[in-house]
Length: 222
Ligand SMILES: O=C[C@H](O)[C@H](O)[C@H](O)COP(=O)(O)O
Picture 1: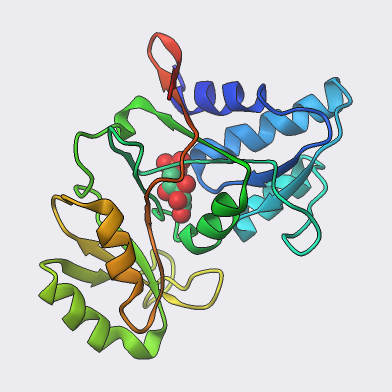
Picture 2: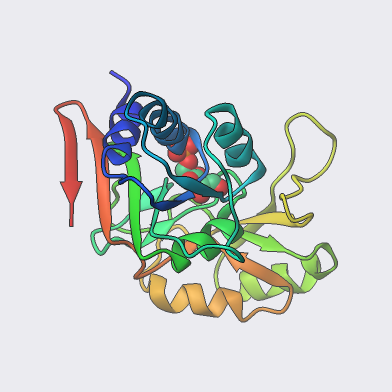
């Protein structure tokens, strides 16, 4: 059973004719975008998407979902994935290095739905290292600040190129391992106050609904 597909397809059923949709990034939102494209064709609904990455832009194109920007439209609903979800619906995101634009689009949305398989639910955030997008020149001072905060930071290295992963915005990604995060709301603010950090992957107090794919089917939280 494909739990990501279950969650992605269920979220696509929430979309209504005429809506402007924030298109999240990742393997779960892949199914969401696919199903929105299918509904446009089969049910003749008209929607527009605001992609949160080049990957999601390409998928929208593939499924013939017209794309727009935050300059032109407000976001009615954003649907996005997550790497970890805690009991208060705080998240870690950015496993695909897309968290900066995701946060901008998700934050702008009237409603944010998070889709995931149920393995993403955790008691406490932090097992998944927090991704930070940083300006390359700031690597050393950012590492020092993160170490002072008790984290073990690493530059994310590319798989199919020598050297670091470069984000869609041309920046480095640092994965900061905090092991356990007691106060994600505060940490989100503290990380963004380090000079050189463009955005971090903690999304606190933003989620309106979580749609999970489980072995028993769809589970809606919140
Ligand atoms: O940068 C990537 C995003 O934050 C993804 O939404 C997150 O990593 C979850 O991805 P997936 O659905 O592939 O587990």
